[in-house]
Image (cartoon, rainbow, N blue to C red; front, side, top):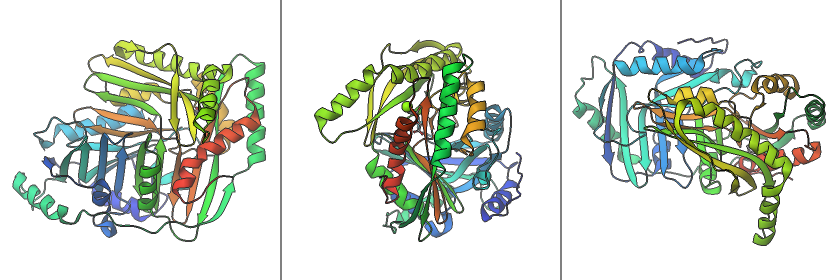
Length: 465
Ligand SMILES: C=C(O[C@H]1C=CC=C(C(=O)O)[C@@H]1O)C(=O)O
Ligand SMILES: [Mg+2]
C-alpha cells in the first residue's frame, strides 16, 4: 500500500497507526442478531467513531450496510492498475483470514467499502487529497440488513490480548450493541450558496458542442459543474444521511466519512452488481424534470421516451455497456427500448442490463471495464476524458466515480457516485453533470444540472431557484 501524505490530518495519522497491522491475521466473526436500527448503529459511540464510518443503502431498503471503526484503510494514489491493485491487496489479506460466518448472506463477513476517483490523471484539488485515487475501508464493526434480517460482523486483527476464540469477540459485540438508538442531530444552516463560474462553464459547454458538431472523433462528452455551500457550523453527515434516506427512496444512499466530513449522495445509477455469477448493470442517461400534476408528469416522460437527442445520449451508454460486458458474460440481456426511472426531482431513460458472468470474473474487474460509462465520461472514452480534463476546470474527485462494496466471497455492488457532494467542515461542494451530444443546447443543460443539484441541496436544508 502507498501513502503519500503532504497533508497532516488526524485522518492520515489514524491510517498510519493502523498500518503496522497489515501483516497480522484478520479474525472475523458474523452472527444473525435481533432487529437493529441502522441509523442507531451508525450513531453508536459517535464521539469515538465520527470520521471512521460508512453507510450504504440500496433502493427501497432491501440491503443496508453500515460500518463503524476502521480496522484497515486501503489508500492509493495515481495507480494505473488501481482496480487490480486493490483486488490483490484484498485477496492477500483474505488469504490469511480466519472467518467465522455461518450465514450464506451476501454483504456479511469481511467487506470492503469505498471507491475510486473519477479520473486518476486529473489535477488533484486539495479537498480531494484524503481520498486518493482508491479509498476503501475495512470496518471494525458492521451491520448488514437484508430484507428484515440483521447480521453483525466484528473484524479484528489477531493480537496478544485476543485469541481466535469467537466467544471473546462475541462478548465485545454484545457489549457494543447495548445502546443502538438513533438520536437527532442539528440541521445545518446554509449561509452562502455559490454556483461556480457559470458563464465559464457555459463557454466550455459551447466549445464541446461545437466540437461534437464539427468533428467525427468524438460523439458524446459529459461535462459537470460545482456548487459551493457555506454553513454557519460544521455540517453533520448524520443529518444529511437521515434526510437522504427519507427523501430519496428510489436511489442508492452512500456515505464515506473522513475526519472533517465525508462524501455523500443518493445515486439512482448502478454501475454493477455481482451476486455469485449474476451480473446487473444499468444504462441511465437522458433526463427531464418532474411535474406535480401526474398528467403533466406523464407528458414529460412520454416526451423524453421519444426525444431523439435524449435517446441518442442514452443509446451510446447501452452500446458501451454491451461491449464492456460481453467478453465477461456467458449471457447478456439488454432490452431493446429504455423505460423511465423517476426520482423526486428528475426522470431518466433507463435500460436495465443483466448477465451471467464467466468463471473467474471479479467485481473489481467489471468495475474497471465499465468505468467510466458514457453516462459520466463520453464516447470514445479516451477523447471524452481528455475534453473533460481540458474543459471542466475542476477536479471531480469521487463524483461520478464507482463507489460501493465487495464482500470476501466476491459479491458486491458499485454505483456511479452522482447526485453527490463532499462535506468538509463548514463547507460542502455539490456536483452535477450532463451528457452533451451534437444536438445539445447549453441553456437546457444548465437547467438540467440545476435539477441534478436538488437532491443534495434539499438534504442539506436548501433549494435551487
Ligand atoms: C452526470 C450526471 O447524470 C448522468 C446520469 C443520468 C442522466 C444524465 C444526463 O441525462 O445527462 C447523466 O448522464 C449527474 O447527475 O451528475
Ligand atoms: Mg442529459
